[in-house]
Image (cartoon, rainbow, N blue to C red; front, side):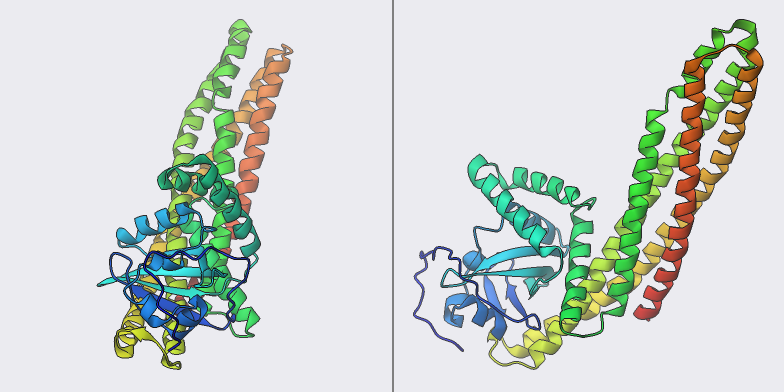
Length: 411
């Protein structure tokens, strides 16, 4: 073990611009009790932190906290693990000398505390996260907002990166870091994580399409009523057009219900895929951590056998959960395909109604730019719906293929 002079309990080393480096191929972990007091770790953690084991064991994990990591991140982290769920997060830590180092940490609850396994982040997300953290930490310092308020703002910023929620972000980030790490080390990517990552990318495309479709419908919600009003101005001659408009309105009401179910199904698909992806990535990371720790010497705290047993149990449990969660993905995809089919039937019926409305209005023989514009809007909306359904059909087929591959990788 490396030894330093004991660090006074109240001392706080200011951060520096120096980086405490470690290799892409290195992994490290630490284990804490429920209060975040360090119980053990591995040799890489001790070396990179620059503390002796006497200075680490029995101290709060926040000993290595760097002011460059927003308080919002730790608020989300503690909120999640205290609820018994794992979480992944980019964290900038501080070594004993004040040097910084970046990690992507996966923190999981264990029987008597928490386990954090960390890798060196090297994906294309890293520059964006560094910029986001720097701006957010500065905002926290200037505004004096609470950690909870800051966390809400951070979630908004994550949505701005293209992720619907933190779960989607952490799953994608873990998968990207694992893939980038494998590529940097010229290794094969983890099969299950790789397949689920592709599924997740497709699912994000589906969510974007579903949201855009719902917004397009919302913009035309009052159009059938406006067609009916415009037809009434033509007197008796406009009655058939008005009847068509009311029928169209009834179908549009059904479409609203179908679109609502469609968006719900898309979100449930996204959540189940991201859950599976994060579980699979966690299992892959812990499996390698177990192998790495087995080959090194110098761990501190409790016995090596105890930590090895925890790592082994964790990776097995998370792999089992990831495999089981694929059933949830399959069910969510089935529900989503069903909602797409229902929407397709209604789009066909709406198209018939739109054409009938156009024909009936032509018989009226009254020129109305407003009516023409309304009917054209419906035509554009239905064309958009048909295009969306075609795209979704292709995405669903790709999803089915990749989901099958993920199941094979889990077998």
